[in-house]
Length: 119
Image (cartoon, rainbow, N blue to C red; front, side):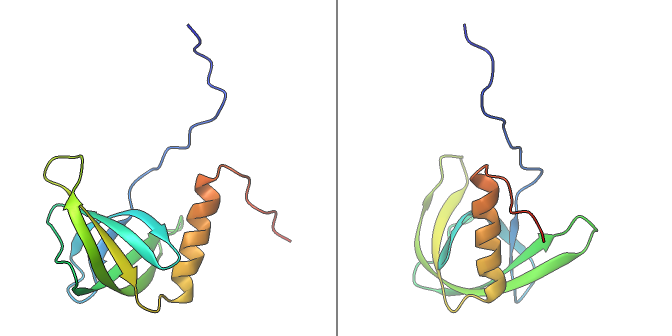
């Protein structure tokens, strides 16, 4: 049986939590992202056709964090493969430039390509 791994695994140290930006209470975890949308994984179903005020808190290695506030409309919601969890797709309304930077950083990280060398 072949047991040698040819591709290095990249473990995620934790999941990125998504908050309600009005109450600052957690509502779920980021499932995936695109330039104009995201998928949220939560323990409660989301109302379809409703605008939500979302907040991402991006941790930095020095203990600080960057906050990105988003307004997003829920387009769909269905049960996740994990019991008692739901996946919901959101369309973002005028995402800030910081969100585009997050999408690009995640794209580079998960492509398993080396990051560009800094000048």
